[in-house]
Image (cartoon, rainbow, N blue to C red; front, side, top):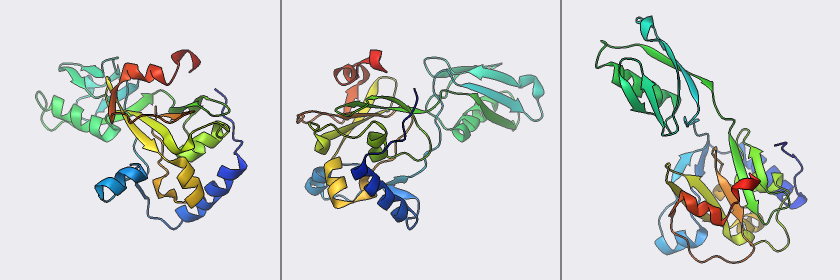
Length: 237
């Protein structure tokens, strides 16, 4: 999908402010629990890594190279269930791991038959990172995830909110396993008014943003993957 870089005037002003503010910050961000939830719990926000590492997913292709035992060099594809089949070892689950974590998993697996295996892992082919914006925005769809994109920037890329949108109850869906999705509610209306950008979360590959038209009842923090069909039509993405 061709990604538009037109940014709505209101959000553009805030994003410019965000850029200036970002030069003064230390590379951490605040988790995206709703303002109301923090008021109820009184807990401090959790700091998270601003630039998360890429996580391996099904269909990715990896090159494994062994420095001292080249007979174990191999190119592998991550299976739909998240496993890879290692020569002489068998199946090892690596889905949702970073490349350094995959290196450690492979090293641990081969330690059963090799002494102190020295292995490097190269991500040879992978699905281009993307995010989805749906609901009450001008141009809902699937967009390439490039760089350090926040949820406000994502909405701007999708053409900004429609007049009837409920921007105070935007939903962020993030897949946490093959079967479950984490749901977070965000008050983007408050962010725009207060210019409090500490809560503007940075998107990860596969994140889905939904802008509702009307108020939602409270959702569980985790929902089954099939439930996403209530919000997004797979045929459109």
